View 1 (cartoon, rainbow, N blue to C red):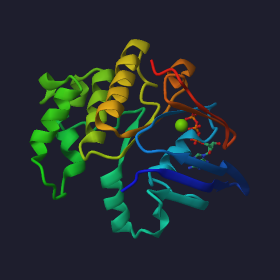
View 2: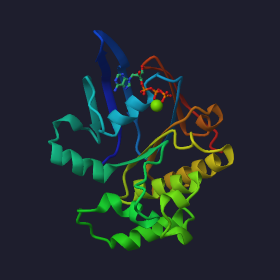
View 3: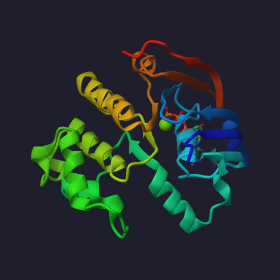
Length: 231
Ligand SMILES: Nc1ncnc2c1ncn2[C@@H]1O[C@H](COP(=O)(O)OP(=O)(O)OP(=O)(O)O)[C@@H](O)[C@H]1O
Ligand SMILES: [Mg+2]
């Protein structure tokens, strides 16, 4: 199945105290499979809202989201859960690891209750190795540094081999050196596994190192550039 994402006239508004806030205003966007894309823009410009809707964690107020030419809103709740499992990996600024589970168990968590064709523990171990934490299998999140926790979160987002990796400020809580390691990891995953990466950042230098840079302001896309440099 083709993994293009298409947003058609996406609107997201929030009602509060009789005032309507528009987080997204008619966003049209075509994201080609396997691309490495950055989203940048001021606080409140709608970046997280757009990512949540593309990842089907939230519904638009109006407009359409298509994954591989299929309108996602037609799916029933259980189909949507399967769709998300098969297609989307999410990474957050705050890592969101389960504190009582070890690194290995956190990576396996999305697979709980799922029938899969591979050995879950084996897969989780491979991912832990891939993110350079092969020696941290039994560590709890509290025993890991911020950068290490984020690498566990990335491994967890990849455990079901999603077509798209959606990362909301994955380096936002990290110092620049650790942020660089995480960025390099996302880029090598994009190149080696072919998964599309859509990442939000406040760092213009990082944003310029994607294949394509989308800039948002006040719920709208104000620029959309192909970046030649891929450094
Ligand atoms: N649940 C909500 N209820 C009401 N308003 C919301 C809600 N979520 C987001 N908004 C509003 O929508 C707008 C866009 O928010 P969003 O979180 O997408 O911004 P952002 O670009 O991710 O900002 P930041 O860089 O600070 O993370 C903001 O004005 C915000 O206040
Ligand atoms: Mg945000």
